[in-house]
Image (cartoon, rainbow, N blue to C red):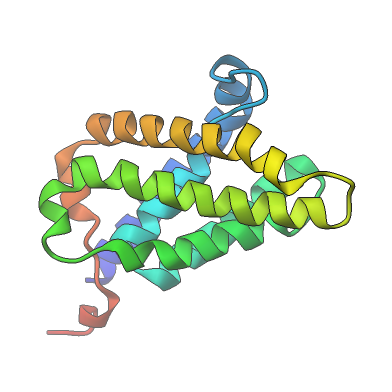
Length: 176
């Protein structure tokens, strides 16, 4: 089981690094529609929390958010919001959900992205003279829809072998 855990951590880390570089090079420039840009690391944080549980989701969300904070210069906000979303994304799962996950996962991404953007724009509007409602409507709802569509496309492109592999449960690590 340790070997599976290490392979899983390595594959998710490589995916995160590739998503991070795709985000800063390709997605922010080519896939941007005005100021609206999909967030690949948020989709991956929701996926990790959804598939592996609240603790791996929150740890991954914090690390992914921290690396995004380095780019924006507003330290802590992305890390906090992605940690919360990574933690709570596991609340939407039960055993029957995995049968229709292809269609259910984009809905989870949409809801998680709405919550992420609500936290993000609320915190951002506290110290500034920005209106939360207009920020959320103008950017949050459109970004959430954009993330859900991209999550559906990414889910369709992900090999089934990888999706079956990402059902690691650390409670069974020491079962012999």
